[in-house]
Amino acid sequence: MTGRNFNYEKTPGVPIKMWTRGVPVEEAAMRQLRNVASLPFVHKHVAAMPDVHWGMGATVGSVIATKGAIIPAAVGVDIGCGMVAAMTGLTANDLPDGLSGIRSAIEKAVPHGRTDNGGPNDRGAWGTPKSVPDSATLTEIVAKHPKIERAAKRAGNHIGTLGTGNHFIEVCLDEDQRVWIMLHSGSRGIGNAIGTYFISKAKEDMRRWFVNLPDADLAYIPEGSDLFGDYIKALHWAQDFARANREIMLAAVMAAIKSALGRAFDREILAVNCHHNYVAMEHHFGADVWVTRKGAVRARAGDLGIIPGSMGARSFIVRGKGNPEAFHSCSHGAGRAMSRTEAKRRFTLADHVAATVGVECRKDAEVIDETPAAYKSIDAVMAAQADLVEIVHTLKQVVCVKG
Image (cartoon, rainbow, N blue to C red):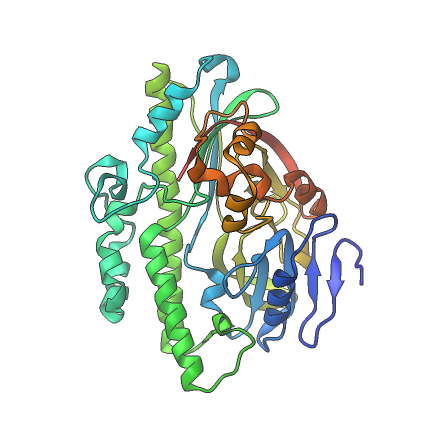
């Protein structure tokens, strides 16, 4: 069935509303959406963004409003993962013809890639561990849940570090050739530990209560339980950590570019810092509900957000239209078109080099799983959500540092 601005599927549970016109959605993702829609505590409907694709338990690119429970795996283990972008006072004419020096300066300023136990990539700002936000709350969480203690002790090493996978730092030019800095990262090891731990605890409760679910990864924590309060506290702490992590890295990137250029410049003329893996209490359709955005950005009327493309595609600074049917949300990117394994099987290094012409970035076999063709068309994704956001700026990367 087709709705006015979205595709609509009726299910035995709540309906599914999908902003996916012109964008392919694999059957595995549809099964996950139907599984979530069958849960009795889901409020009104499930909203699927145009970048929707298979994820652990719940699809990446979905918005799930719930009353009385939260699904930890729907939030995921990269709690608070999101984007920050800032317009600088620089223009394209201020950049050198060769950009390898800027890329090198950024790579030296921000730890990235695989980390080890105390190695240089595991220490923020390539040196002394930094203090973490609200350490007293983290201490309280660890006291009740000591299994996350090891990760908590390393949080000071991880803040200010990029991580791996699809996390990145980019220097971009907008439609007026102004220089932007944009980066994508989350709550690092401590967020992963918190997410993994509470997913495990929720699964234990499901088994103890003999709750049968369509997918074990949809194990939930009921509101009012001691575990729920602890999870919310830990969740919100990790979200704040992720935001601070991005702010620290943004400052480091700005300083690196200043050093590489040998000149100062205005910074953060316009800055946006938004989560896309998180939970917030919001009011929708007459009720206060927990909104889980798993790979989705809040897009209330006037909200600024960031929708990145792939390594070789355009990205967008957007302004929300506050569409109530989407729970005031939009996509968080282009969305994967295939798994990392499939991308490595299908594409060659020559394919990747050709797809990233004009971008100063890694061009080696280790990043083929992040090559542009592994993602959906960002243009199709943007067209499918024209009633969710309007485009404010269009960015094209000229430097890309991958995790």
